[in-house]
Length: 173
Image (cartoon, rainbow, N blue to C red; front, top):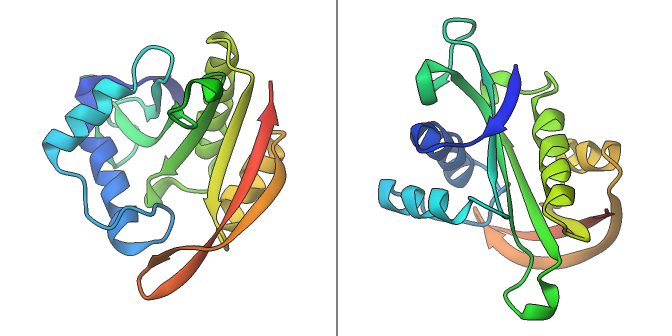
């Protein structure tokens, strides 16, 4: 397994992994699956200073979603602007998703580590993670990578008939 910058050839695999979370879990607060055109726009936004990365396995090494050059996309992550107002421009928010069939194998850690490295390379000052309450695996992953819990937003979202908290973690670079 290795990580690399995401390419347009990975778009459908990324969209598939993400849409499973949209429709079945609370890990994202999106309520409607992403369309192909929305995925293309997402890919365009996640280049340059706010990149997307994928964790991939060589073709034929494992079952899964095919990306660029037949590689199997195991998971992905991205950096996004933390907020749109200019004073926040030195801060980014990370997102990490791992295909269900490939969880607990270090893929999330590899993706998050690469995102943190890229954030530093691009000159950002801090990385923020906003994780739904109860997603203990993602919270533990971020803490293992040096993030600290800085707050909890109580019942900030509603999905699948439940009020959801968001745990905010931060890593100073």
